[in-house]
Length: 201
Image 1 (cartoon, helix red, strand yellow):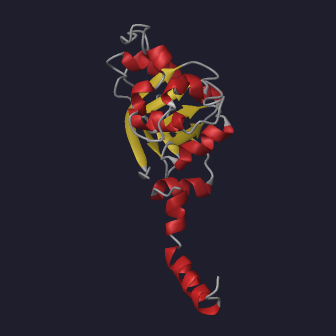
Image 2: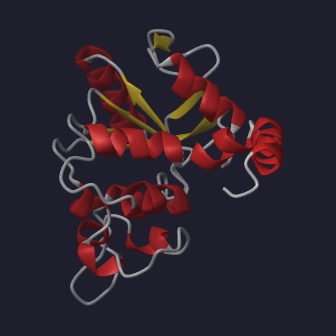
Image 3: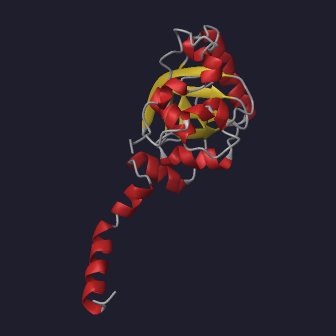
């Protein structure tokens, strides 16, 4: 998993509440178990017209936000079904950080397992960031995980809280497999011990 330490990038505003996982990646894209290639389907029902052409009014299709790596979204982001394809699609598109006031629990956990940082901040701070991103068109933010703050917005840095274990995993690029491999020596030693003391096992 790619490490997340400090991210500096364009922040795209998506002022919609209750964006569910079907809006993030609709069901027709769930036929694959590959983590790549899903970026084309991200927000497809809002991003494309019925004829397949891009919707010029959708934020990520506008030139200033097309290369965004940070998304500022409304409350309860990632609600709905538990599909892990949702963070896969966000990551494949290039979004590494989602800022909101709250996230659905399963989506929130899946983000950390895939190298995406979901940042929870207060409503006043979110409103301020959303307004600046919409007004300025090209608001650049720096999300510093080590310092646990968002910089670049008017009004100074915005601090955020994060579970220390999840922070450790993101900074070191450790998903569940990576955490297991950190104990590879102990696992190998245990297996050798079992082979010697219980050869029938």
